[in-house]
Image 1 (cartoon, rainbow, N blue to C red):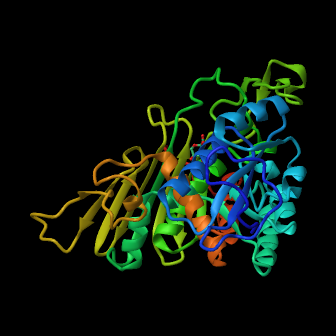
Image 2 (image 1 turned 135 degrees about the horizontal axis):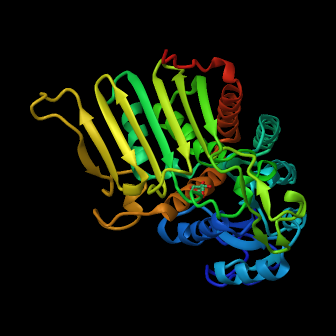
Length: 416
Ligand code: SOE
């Protein structure tokens, strides 16, 4: 970790040669980020806000932003508060003022950037899913384990673990308040591509995204369910579907999507639009999962319900400050799901923000994520979720795809 060498937070001057940390001054932690679309924007918000709301042991400095277009990256850096610009991620990794590489690019580049950064001694925060294939995820996890032995750490950005209500549910399960876990019922419902004229963006192309709804939002509910229950999936059986198989080519900075469709005006959608699967957890619980981008009317509805022998919890991200709790020990006449408003100082993360009842949003989960990452780096402890956690999710994704590809298991309904 580079030593403190700049003035207090604000427009960060171009870092000079590092100097020793004055007594009591927090050491500097130079951040370099690759990618500046949706995830880059919300990660930038997290790096800006974390030091303002949490007493961090190191001071994140937004040193450089990397993107393919020099003009677009410079504009984004100016708007988001990054001090410098790179157009080659290798140059970003090589910068002396960068201690952490934050990867906010499509999944096809995660492995090469993360492994190079870790081997260069840079800590890595990588967006989910960890990779586009199990082989890539295994190589990343291997590199992370080797780097950890050198005090260089990696985290995968499953941000929903940092929703206060989800962290509270995990706390209650760990305390035994739900008893034996019998059911996990998880959905992630969106509807942003229901319109057949929505273009063939990178998330709809296997070569860039690895899979469709399954890897993009299915990965979240798999990780969230494994996080809350403390168990992992051991068996799955799946269906996937692509409802719209061709879409207009997407405009890109270099004109229509390069290399897609061979000059035609439409391109093939070669990923799933929806994935449904059932599964069994290592502790015996039965589970159902649904990840779809065609749940017309649902915008970002990550929902999970856990039924235990003693109690249940239920959560919907579209009401993210609420956790519903049913205590089965209560007399039936007064039992039922009651709403817990997860905004009290004693709730995970909530005390750093506003008085009870004022609530948090999507971006706060990323602030919590970078806060935990900075604390892990400063204390020399492995961040969570680790790349091994990301690999575990990747193996579930691959099992779901294998199951969905094997149509022989499906049993036809005989109506005659
Ligand atoms: C999908 O559109 C998406 O942006 C995911 O990629 C994110 O991980 C999720 O948090 C919101 O939806």
